[in-house]
Length: 434
Ligand code: NAD
Image (cartoon, rainbow, N blue to C red; front, top):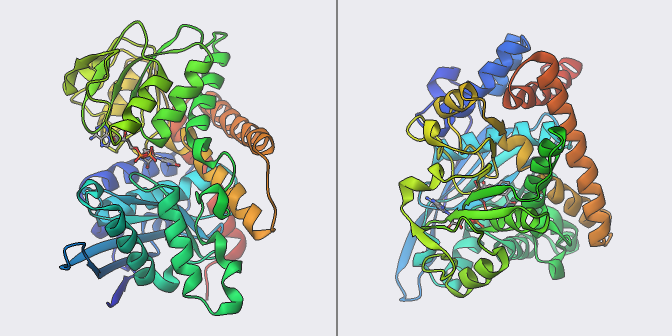
């Protein structure tokens, strides 16, 4: 199948489409205005470097062939190889991939990593396919992406509905299609692999652990503790589960949870491990968990609590529900869960938002450690990973918090300003070729 590579050369306005892209662009422009970003750098960062769309055939279990559409958007690589997840979900399209790729550029820059930003995925509902079909879809997608990814060029990772198994299939397919002498040297083409296949101990929990740390740092700055704090989580997957796990360990109480199948509430606390084991047995669904009551979807965000963790999809907190949120803190586990209108309402109400590019950056920091481990032929231990992650997350939180206080701006704009300035510096030092 042909690979269509589109490098947008139109004006900034022309690449804007409705939805998540509007959101990320407005966030970017707010920060760019604040730091008086050079107009040329603003132009460069407002568009994506490459947009790869592939259509590829896969044989289904019943013998029929289905055609799939996959995306990989490479936003910017001024600081290093493109880095970002692959999502399997019906909402994956070019708009979502562009916005998510941009968020990755800001996130890797803010974290001080030698990476740029990319994102992609396939528009599909994985629950409709068998394990064997998902494996063939993943392998054929990898083959279709071909040299558009690579360990020193563009390094995917897990995201919604993809996991360490998906990464193992990608790594195997990518390595198998390299010349023999290069095969094993390409293991770091993806991160988030299983531990037996070059994966990093602790990468599974890195994002949720980072979300937990950011909440802890914020609470500590207010001279409070997590003991007895009530929290709600939207999305009980990799990020939501691990964040809840660590918060519960510190005495906080999960009082409501929502996934793609339903919502639950128990103001006395929902035991995180019990819910995790239940949902694992129910193919990822929390519905009918016996130790909580069902909650209607619309009431979820209005639940009485101290902390709200959106850890599912984008555009979940909007002008429709922002005024009814009870939490004092929103910790964005997901990418882009709060849109610009929703954020304005929250900030006016004095609610703090720890922005996605800071709050969920533990995942990409963990991915960086895995990439280094593979590149250097090392095997890192869990305690070493956690110590390094603690240090990185603390540094990022402090610099965003301090900048926000000094400049009198929200944490999101502060995080963007720091991220954008680092990229601006690289462009200023190098100049623009030719
Ligand atoms: P996951 O597939 O492991 O879990 C997603 C969860 O969200 C599931 O519980 C699913 O049922 C739920 N969900 C899906 N649609 C929903 C809906 N409409 N309403 C409520 N719940 C819904 O995915 P994940 O890896 O945990 O990713 C979650 C979010 O975190 C995404 O926005 C992702 O981009 C972001 N993120 C993930 C990582 C990572 O390392 N996995 C890193 C940074 C950011």
